[in-house]
Length: 72
Image (cartoon, rainbow, N blue to C red; front, side):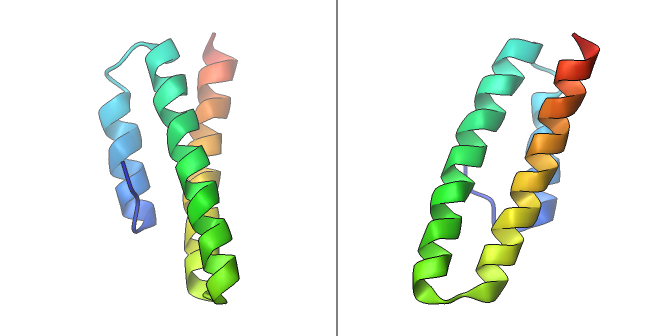
C-alpha cells in the first residue's frame, strides 16, 4: 500500500482496525518501511514537501502501533 497523504494513512489505519492486533502490527510495520524508503528517495531528490509528508504519515502509523502496544 502506498500513501500520498496523511488522509491515506488514516484511511488505512481505519481499515486495519477490523483485523487482529498482530495483523495490524505487521501491516503497519510494512507501511512504515515503505514510507521510510520513500522518505529517503525524497531526500535524494531534495523534495522537502515529500520528506515532511512521509514523516507525518510515519508518525501516524507509529502512534497506532503505540495504541496497539498499550492495549495488549
